[in-house]
Length: 76
Image (cartoon, rainbow, N blue to C red; front, side, top):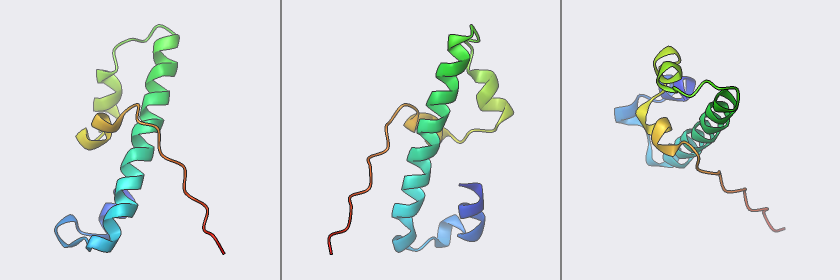
């Protein structure tokens, strides 16, 4: 996401790039959720430390736990 945002200044991000960015946010939220669950399974219940240490954007935190929808195969 940071690389994507650096390549596309947010104020000037073309509408055509928004679906790609949304997909990155959703995938990051899912990965964050899996990481938090693994930590909680080992007894580390406070996820605030993760959010601060890794500087997790709020939009990713809000997507935490959402399962990305699989891509639809293209028909030929």
